[in-house]
Length: 192
Image (cartoon, rainbow, N blue to C red; front, side, top):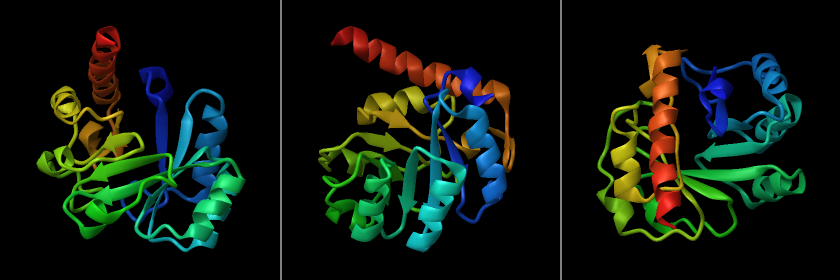
């Protein structure tokens, strides 16, 4: 469904939530989508060895790290040619202090990642990043275009905003979200 919607990436959640996958489920999804879409492992405060094992066993392309990102983990992921996205909660000390140079992108989320709660984007306007910025938190098909336009983000991440029930993705919501996000990027591309 996510591949058919035209999305660029699919998140495979290892963080504790209603969306959490086992390594076997993640491997099955990753194998079915190999070559069609970027497969992103989403981790929150997991030990480095768990992240590396999950990335290897599920054969993922990207690690999205919520919480501490050690130099050892970052370097190990790089050695495996895995892209690294560092998630930052807007308004946190880490949001203001994190040096994004060693990662491939930053994901800017709300104060409670994974909650689907909308939040203010005004702090993002005053923070310069050298890497691409992906916005997350409280996004849905109805607001993604406005959030992208107001933040000039490089990408958008959604989970609960495209669900019909907690942990259950709705095909229409997924398709509409991707369509609306793509409309923004297509419009910006034409301006360049």
